Structure formats: C-alpha cells, structure tokens
Amino acid sequence: MSKIANKQMICEVLMEAARTDKDIVALCSDSRGSGSFTPFADTYPEQFVETGIAEQNLVSISAGLAKCGKKPYAVSPACFLSTRSYEQAKVDAAYSNTNVKLIGISGGISYGALGMSHHSAQDIAAMAAIPNMRVYIPSDHLQTRELIKALLKDEKPAYIRVGRNAVDPVYEEDNVPFEMDKATVVCEGTDIAIIACGEMVRPARDAAELLKKKGISASVIDMYCIKPLDRKAVIDAAEKAKAVITVEEHSPFGGLGSMVSQVVGEVCPKKVINMSLPDSPVITGTSKEVFDYYGLNSEGIAKKAMELMEK
Image 1 (cartoon, rainbow, N blue to C red):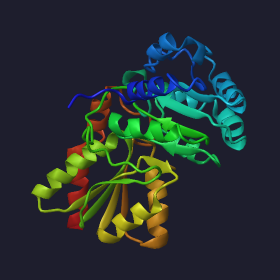
Image 2 (cartoon, rainbow, N blue to C red; image 1 turned 135 degrees about the horizontal axis):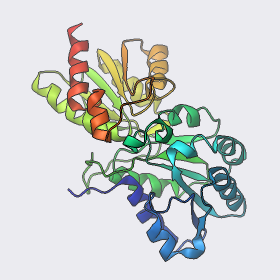
Image 3 (cartoon, one colour; image 1 turned 90 degrees about the vertical axis):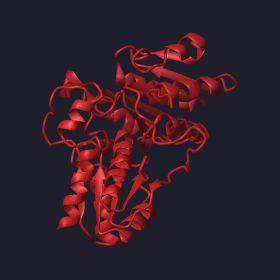
C-alpha cells in the first residue's frame, strides 16, 4: 500500500472541503511548504493566511476568524505551536471556546538532527492540561483522513499532532475503523495490553505479531484520542491482561502513559510500564534511528512485553 505523510492528508481533506465551504481557512506561520499546504495556498488564495514566523499571531488571528464564523486550521511546527503560542492556545482558543483547529506538524522528534529546540516531546502534557482543549495524534494517513473529516463537523477547539514523514499504514484503504473520541482495537489479546498513539501504533501492532510467535497474546489499542481519553477502552484492555504497556513519542511525564496509569490505578490496579522518550535531550538522528536507539520499535516493545511476562 502506498503511504503519504499525515500532514499531506490533512491538506487533501481540507482542500476537498474548501471547494464548497468557503468558510474554511488555512493559516501558516511560514510553514506552508513544511506543512504540505502549498497546494491549498495556490488553489484557494482567498482562504489562506500567511502570518510569517509569528506563532502567537497565528493562533490569535485564527481565534478572531473563528469568532467571525470562519473555520480556521492553524498549521505550524508542533515544537513552536505548543510552546511559543501556549497562552494564545489557552486563552484565545480554549478559554474563549473558539472553533480553532491547531495542526502541529513535524511533531515528536520528526526534525531529527535539528535537536531539542525543534522537538516536541512535551506537547501532549501541555495541551492536554488546558481545559476545553482536545488532543489527537493519529497513527497513519488513513486515520488522519477520518479524524479531519470528523473535526470538520464540530466547532470546538482541538490540537492535532502529526509527524513529518510518511509512515507505514496501520489500516487498509477499505477498512479504517473510526469512531470519534473512541480508541481503535487493532488486535485482541489476553496476556499483555499495549496502548499506543501516533507513529508508535504500527510498531506496537508488529510487536504483537512477534509476541504471537512466542506464544504471548497481546492486545493493541490505538489511542489516537489522547484527550478525551477513552477510559472504557483502557479499562477493558487492562482487565483482560496481566500487565499494560504504553508506547508514545513523548516525555515520560504527563503523556499517554501518565493518563493510562491514572485510569488503571483507579479502576483495576496492575502493573503499567511506560515506553517513551527519555527525560533528556534525545540523540541526533532520523526518527527511525532515534526510535531504534531507545527501543521504541517492534523488537523493543516485544522485548519489554516478554520481560513482563517472565516476572
């Protein structure tokens, strides 16, 4: 199956919708190229706003447009969108309950060699802590398509983080199970529950296949909806399993692992292991090189699961 970057799929869905809905507006902070939004800007120049490198203005202008009845999609690197414009995201978007969709591109460690200044390993924790702000991290371009279509139908603020490069798909073109704010069960299992988000879902699925060959039954949950977290999916998976592993491209603090641990600890206490980026600047390299180094790949996840089963 062909693969495209999630950010490109976002542009394609919005271009199709903008053809008949002239209220849809895309805004970029000198990021139309890196965000794959040049086609949108070229096709609908009257529905496109370029703010330049001014992320705070990007969010505030988006909120103003939303108050005028427009449907703004603000596209900017996640590392800057989730930090430089944090107050605007909190006040202008969330507190004011404006229909602003914040698209954080090149999230996590997508920028690789550019280092910590361009990595966004804190954005889940930061954005999820804002009241009234939803947080989504789709796992492939097919799920991204369904998510953006769903977001086009509501008028609430949201933060969507996607990576920079195309990734191997999790789903099939004609089989993309999706329900808004409900996690997707990628596969069922009874020994280990693996709950992952974003680019970590595919290696989690591949890890389940490796574990199956070892006689270990693993369930895999695609928690694309970080907030609101699908508590029922977490509880159902945890209750069936002996232990839970969370996998995320994020700091070990305040992300998916922390949220899942809160739910499991409250409802069905058992061991939860969080696989994440370290609490330190990550090594320099491509996404794959970084993931391999820290064991955030199918082999690393399977190894962690086998270690848990031996205890």
